[in-house]
Structures are given as C-alpha cells and as structure tokens.
Image (cartoon, rainbow, N blue to C red):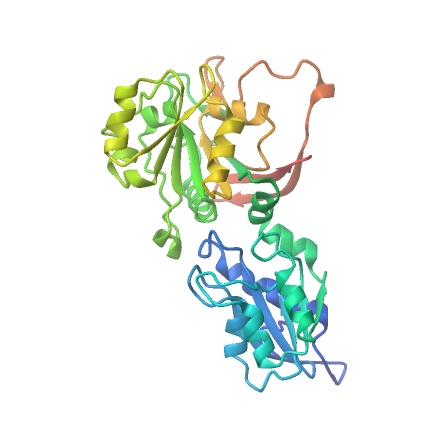
Length: 380
C-alpha cells in the first residue's frame, strides 16, 4: 500500500505509524520526479512526519524553484513544530538562486532532520547539518544512503573527482555492429529505443560524438523528451582537424551550445570561422587526436557533470581504452549484420588475453519494442 496515498495505513486491524524507512522511501520517490528537470542541481525529495503521519511532501522542480524541504514545509497540513523532516540530501546553508533551506527548517520549528547523505558540494559540505545542530535540531545521516547516492551518481562523481560521469550509449545488431561497411546506420534500433535515448539525453550535461558521426549522420543532438525540451544539453564534438561543416545542423542550430575539441595543429582559419558563429573551440594540447581524459577535464571545469557518448566507433574505443566510461546503455536489435568490413562498437588492438577483461556489472536487461537494452556499470 503506497504511503503516497495514505498518511497512515491499516494492518492487522491496527493503525501503523509511518516508519523512518518508509518516509525516506517516499522522499526518494518524490526526488525522482525531478528527472530531466533539475540539472545541474541534484534530484531531492522531502517528507515531513508528525506523530507517525505524513503532513507535508515536496520535491525540487528545477533551478530557481524552492528546494524540496521548503516545498514540503509549504504543503504541511498541520503545524510542523516538533516534526521530523526526511530529506534525500543534506539541507543547504548558503544563498544561491534560493535562500538557505536551514533557515526555513529552523523557523518552522522542525525537531529532527534525517537526511540520506551529506552533500559533497563545497558550498554545503556539512555546513547544513552543522547549522541545524547549532540551532538545537537533531540531524542524522544514513537512512537510504546508497539509493540516494545512486539517484544523483553524476552529481556525486563530479563533486568528488571534478570529472563528468561518462555514459556510453550504443545501438547495434546482435553481432555488435553499429553500421554497415558503407557507413549506413539509421536506423538499426527501433522507435522505443530512440525514445529511451532522449530520456538519457534529458539527464546529462553534454552529448559527445566524433566528427565522423557528424559527417555521416548530420545529427541535431537535441533532447526531445517531455518537459526536458526546455533544457538542452551541450553538444560536444571531437574533431582533430576541424573538418566540421559550417552548414551542419550542429553549427546552424544553437551554435552557442556547441563545443568542439581539436588538436593543436588544427587550422586557425577554420577555428576563426567557427568562433565567429558562436561555437566554442578548445585546442587540446596533444599530437593528433584529442586525448579523451583532457577533454573530460575541460568539460568538468566547465561544470558539466555528465556526458553521454553516442559514437562513433573510434570515440567508443578511445573512451573504453582510457577507462573513462562509468555506465553503459547497450541497445541490441534482433537481427545480424555480419560482414568482415561492417563496423563494430569497438576497434583498437583489443585484448591480448582474456585475463585482461574488465567485466561490465549488468544492472538490468529490458525490452524496448523489438530491441533489448543491457544497462550496466563499469566494474571498478
């Protein structure tokens, strides 16, 4: 029985108070409502419980909107004085687009705050919990911690490492081919799979491809899923020699959201032509192809928390070989392509021995129309 419907529920003839675990579970459910809407902020949900009953709920709806704790306080059905606040992330104690949540919590007279995990953001970093304790409010961390971290894994990863969380997405045939020998690849996977890809685009800060994919497919790299159309991720292209066509959709449509990484030897006149159109060009100081790790460092310094890599073959290989991929979305269509010259997901020199293999930790396998999706994490 969902506690989102009932404040208390009947079991065995007795009314049972909502437990701490149930309250936090509901807060996590609320936090997920922010999927694709709150970036670059983390998804956060909050529940207020008094005398065993949920009296207020809230979730963060996006940058500039009130935080989950304030939303829950505003929606309380009775006075929250002395109540327990359950929130999926440590309350903030700084002025950003909105005032500190700690002030609202203290002013409301909340007696105890249970937060799932401390906020690694240096603007918060324990300051929220400390402020609450100084005001005499018991602040306790830990309930639902693992799930709360998973919910905002890119946010935590970026705060701790400075690098974006890297997601590799590939659509392929059963034999792992992403294109025919002549380069044809649209469309290997079906409509349902492509809808899922747009959901993935909604959660990331940037989509990254190579210049070969631009030349072959002339993509837009936009998110066309639900309300997330309002926030478009950056478009990033690895283009060693700046061969990017000035008439391509990426340059013609929202060039201010396009970031191109090239080598130190790339032609200066082409760089000038791109920057005059509003494109940002970064010269990565390596010989030949831009180094994937230096590209990720640059994007991380720009504040990009997560990157979705959509191809092609050479880009996939470079990032996997560099050990930079954190998460995988591998879509398989139910047919073979075959052919020695067809293009596979990965190239390079490959493993010299099976002892070198690095398994992917498979999280789930699901159907999307006629295709199936293998979702997993780098097992590091």
